[in-house]
Length: 108
Image (tube, rainbow, N blue to C red; front, top):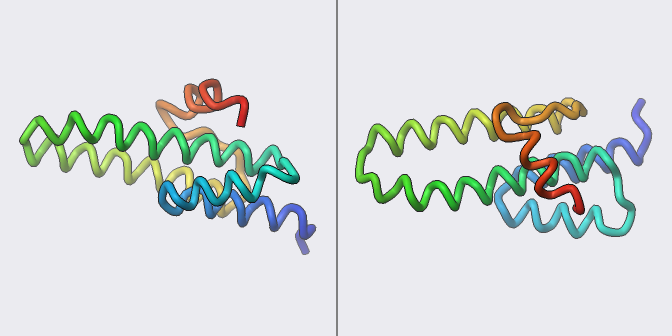
């Protein structure tokens, strides 16, 4: 059986991947009792959502359904990778951009 603190960290990390609002809620949940596992996944999710919105704005102007479709598939795969890592209790960085997000949001 898992410790309550470990289960709480997994719950917070999982919530971080449920929309940008979930990331903000997870950030607030993790502000009192900082947990390294939760912070890791909050940084990953926050970076994923912010880059999705930022890059998605420009991809939308491409006016190409193939570019847009490829963009959505790419980010969905990255999201699945991070979400499953949080569910399984693993601290695996998201491929391609995970290390950058950890460095960019290291203060969280």
